[in-house]
Length: 333
Ligand SMILES: *[C@@H]1O[C@H](CO)[C@@H](O)[C@H](O)[C@H]1NC(C)=O
Ligand SMILES: *[C@@H]1O[C@H](CO)[C@@H](O)[C@H](O)[C@H]1NC(C)=O
Ligand SMILES: *[C@@H]1O[C@H](CO)[C@@H](O)[C@H](O)[C@H]1NC(C)=O
Image 1 (cartoon, rainbow, N blue to C red):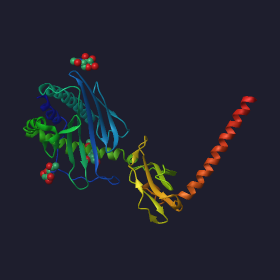
Image 2: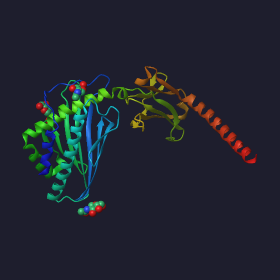
Image 3: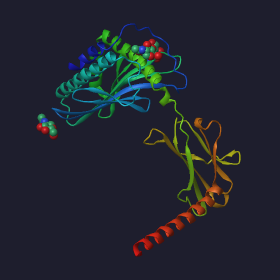
Image 4: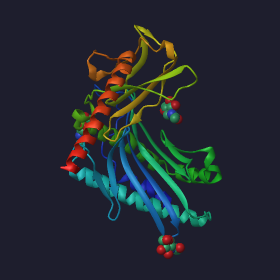
């Protein structure tokens, strides 16, 4: 029954007026924009739980969480958005208390339902803004990696994977009409306010433009007499980018685009390849279009690359020989 106190706690966090305002996603941001808090709880035994909580603006981590005592870690200078210190303390206390109650609730349910240790619970809560629509708030919980219960619109919904347990819990939670209203307001008022404040405070960083670097390399040969031409594009921000293998102005239909991967510094990496007959590689080029380039596409020619490759090899061989000679001289001097 401790679980039922969670929504009550949510009540502490909600502020005053709550009309359903339509939102606009601020200029320069791709919708939807979202903020969420994720916690992973690993229950090892009946007295030991490990937790990892973090706050995310879209795909960027903006907040961490330190246990004992529960403290929000602000990862960026702008991670406080436009909330006052009082509001942030309130938020921190709220998270700490709801977290403690959540763990207690899980323990008591584990006992009641004779759940076997170890097990894992996840909770994600936050909000998402689409231009011209009311904000969408959500809470999703999972047990052992499967969806369990979620909060949609103004009520709790159990997921099929959650089975009977999720249904029982959903019915219990939905009995408390007032609390649902409270959670809804928290998710669709406080959260969007915080999100918009965050976007505004972090604007300079979030809307930065970082130019990609691009280079070519041969990939593993797909077969006899064939070549894989690989175009690497790295270090760009934001993520949307257009990369294509071209012959003159003609896009090559066989162009294969991998998933965009993250670099450690928050920029991205993309690999785009094309399989061709070796005799047809000549005249092909890789073309990169990105918002940071101001309309000046990067164009890399494969012919140029292969000759540059030989020049580079010659330079490297020369350097190695010279280094060897220098080392020999130094030893014998
Ligand atoms: C839970 O695990 C910890 C760490 O392994 C151990 O020290 C503790 O005694 C365990 N408690 C119970 C009740 O098993
Ligand atoms: C939420 O409620 C609105 C209207 O109140 C409805 O149009 C929408 O489909 C509902 N969404 C979900 C996920 O239930
Ligand atoms: C923070 O910014 C948002 C969006 O601009 C605004 O709605 C809100 O009133 C501001 N202040 C606080 C304390 O939320």
